[in-house]
Image 1 (tube, rainbow, N blue to C red):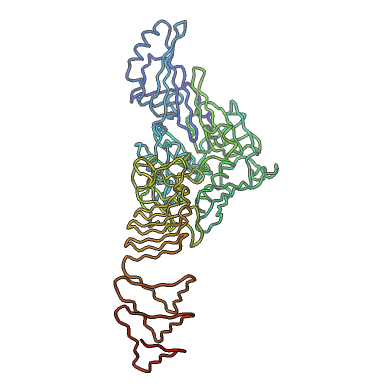
Image 2 (tube, one colour; image 1 turned 30 degrees about the vertical axis):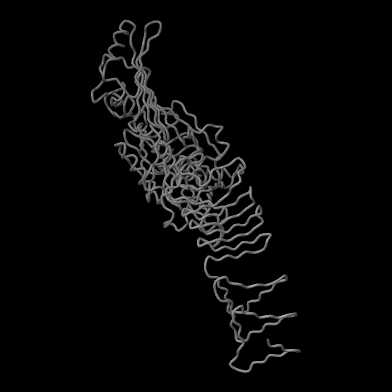
Length: 600
């Protein structure tokens, strides 16, 4: 049966503070302790010591020089009553020490402390996590800081998960939220846990008996009926979606959150990402969004006499608050205030909003849909590999120095100026080329190669002129297609000297090969020139026609005509002449005929 805080709050308070394993000296006048814990936040503690006017200078000097009270020292705070029911309400390290004195010379020293997990909030980092689940990634990151972890398993295994310029803490928060997990830092241990919905309840708060102050609200404005998350599937070329299931949460109040949302006209929330998320991840995202909404249904705070039993993500039982609020509530925040007047504990109920999101930023959807710390703007990449995409999606493997300079890199889709099924433009970068990357939905997992870049190291094949007269395609083996706007000419050439040129300036079309053979068409006609033999071979007929004349000659060889039948016919005169000798003969009959035949 749950205990009332009054059952364990009688008598004189017992406060124990240990620094580096030793209890603090009694000569120090500790006047207040303030401890705060919250989901997704780093636990903090502040201890204030009073310095009396008569010895403020002496004590300020002693405390300022003491190694026991400087940042880095380990601190443990325990609280209870008359040496009983002692609980550790904070464990961490000192991160700040301050001493002060007013005009009356009455001063104080304040020690500000944080959980050791504070290290995870320092320094932005980038990295790749390949073929890992979010739960495995979280455990690995926490272990890097020498901290204990307790992480609920997640289902989806990422082929590539990218962390870009984010603290490890923020990275954990986004990935936990994407999977419906709560992040809890507690005495050097980091937990990623599902919201506690049932189990043992250690503490009971009876309104008329235990409660000092309270502020509880029933909030219906976020109580949507369901969530559907959609993304573009490049394999099917269609939207794929995942729908939420109603979460199982603690039983608080007698009104159904979904029904209350419907009462004010709320329906389904539809979220869309341009990143190619798979259905399993979309389902987890939808479930997480609905869980967060339901956790916001009943929220508020309750203050009671100091007690060290409450823990984050555990249940506390409310009684006497009426049917709307009675039941088991999930603890999402804890505050301990200890002064000379006594010890007060305040627990928060309901989801804790992300304090880093300002009201003005909520007008638009979060970058990367809030699933990851986003990457903004364009990024530079270098090509590692252009073939063997493991997904078979024609992607290119690139290294992104701003994320990790080296390593496996990430696979990126390539934007083409014309791409359709089985057809289109096919121009891929070379290995080691510098490329420009954009990211779908600002999600660092899904890069797109937008284009390739020249530089002083990777020179362009041409030098630009003020008229911008040359456009060209030049391959790595110097195959060229050149457009010359100045000469209105189009040329195709190979490195061996084979050329095809269409020129408006020269009013010509020319074809020339590396052997000196040439075909040229211009306003003078057609010139066909061969460096050696010229062979015309037709499976049918060859017809030669000319208006002004037709001639055939050779300067150093014979002219031979051969066929089954040879017929020469002149519309006027016909002559055949040999300068040295002429012969007309036949193995058969020879006929010489005319109106008049003259021989010699």
